[in-house]
Amino acid sequence: MDIKRTVLWVIFSMSLLLLWDNWMRHNGKQSMFSPATPSQQAKTVSASAVAGAASASAASAATTAAPANAAAASTEVKSETITITTDVVKADIDTIGGEIKRLELLKYPDSVDASQNVVLFDQRGDQIRKEKTGFFGLFSGTKDVVVPARIYKAQTGLVGGNFPNHKSGFVAQPGNRTLGDAKELSLVLVSEQNGVTLTKTYTFKKGEYLIDVKHAVTNNSAAPIAPSLYMQLIHDGTKPTGGSMFTGNVEFYAPAVYTDAEKFRKLDFEKIESGKEVLSTKANDGWVSVIQHFFVSAFIPQDKVAREVFTKKVDTNLYAVGSIVALGNVAPGATATMDSRLYSGPQESAVLEKIAPGLDLVKDYWYFAMIAQPMFWIMEFMHKFLGNWGWTIVVFTIAIKLALFPLSAAGYRSMAKMKVVTPKMTALKEKYKNEPQKLNMAMMELYKTEKINPLGGCLPILIQMPIFLALYWVLQASVEMRGAPWIGWITDLTKPDPYLVLPILYMISMYITTKLSPAPADPIQAKMMLFMPLLFSVMFVFFPSGLVLYWVVNNILSIGQQWVINNKIVPPEHR
Image (cartoon, helix red, strand yellow):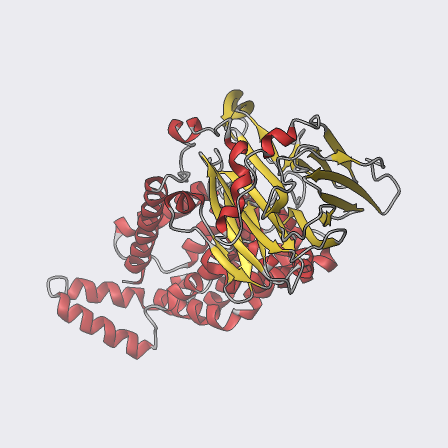
């Protein structure tokens, strides 16, 4: 009966997996077993999308839209790209609008092409990229893959009148463009429109992905003004191609907002398109962001300042998430300033926690956050001493095994006792083979007499499953482990084992575990149990190597524990 339950649990789990995959495909998301469909790849960004972004102020009924002649104003200053280079980022800033149109992370190689770096902010058309083909080095080659067009920018400007905005022309003031040995450098951009001057200052610091963004509004006109400052991230809604849940390379883009009152809220471009998630929320704190796998960009306005958080469809397949902050009345000759920050970089928990409340919540642990978050904290603490994430997983697995030792020992004792009474169970099945009700009663009486928990054999597996799944999401969400090596052939714990060593070790360890467990009386069930190690090993071929490492170490420890208990309880003739 215990074996039957195990088989049924496996079938049930596989069924859930297939149902989940079908649900993903039904909702237009990436299948776990196949590459993106042609329809997903064909979806591109409208070339005219940027032209509509100036209407961000429409999210507030009290704020007037950007002036209609803003585009004409931008022609007065020639577009120039200012490139700022620090030790960690390379940023391209356009003098039209003073927007950050490209941001390259110099310390993070691209997951597909290691010769290139990760690029967050970007504006480009469709690209053809060479990707490797073959199965773990076999029948290898390359194929051309269409990488869809991308629009992703950080924009700021003024609304409430005919003021400079992200389509106005700015003049860059002289200054250093490369950080070098300095601790920080600033880029100052100035735009004047109808007697109102907007001075935008970006300050980059050594070793940081956090950019200080200061806006100063000077009223050189003869009448008072009441401008509002908007800070927005615009992004297209095209779904990324490639990646799967198994390989630890799930790509996605999603807007997210946080306020102290409503806490963290992850949104969806498709729902913004349909009008189901169009926000217009007032708050005195919080931030807006666009999150993706391992990375995030977030505008963080000055704290304790009233702002309106909004989402908006800007143009065809282009969306904005941002904040609007009123600057109050600015008298003639006066200047109003507003400090804010823009973080655009990796989702490092220790860094995000210090920048703003709730910013670390952009790390997506799915429904396993309650387990995954403390799990990562423990592993991060261990990593400070070990210095290697692979050995951290090994030590963490040992620690978990020791913590759960009493529960797993109870399960293995029940399995050992099942081995001892297997001949009696076989005799009962033969005796009552045509009387299932009497057989069940006799089996229950046997369990009671021998003090066996029939579900005890499932305990070692059941108590490990939440930890196993939480670790999967820790590997999925933690940029700290992205590209982290273990030993030799394992150069990235978030990707599958390139030489299948760990899946093979898992198969061997699971086979030994199966042999130490009670043998099913039914020959068909016995064959199925011997087939299980191969089935799971094939699945583990596609899992992140860090996850397979955890399970291999866990199996090795289980074999030792089970062998000791078997030697104490099971007579030699039944082992």
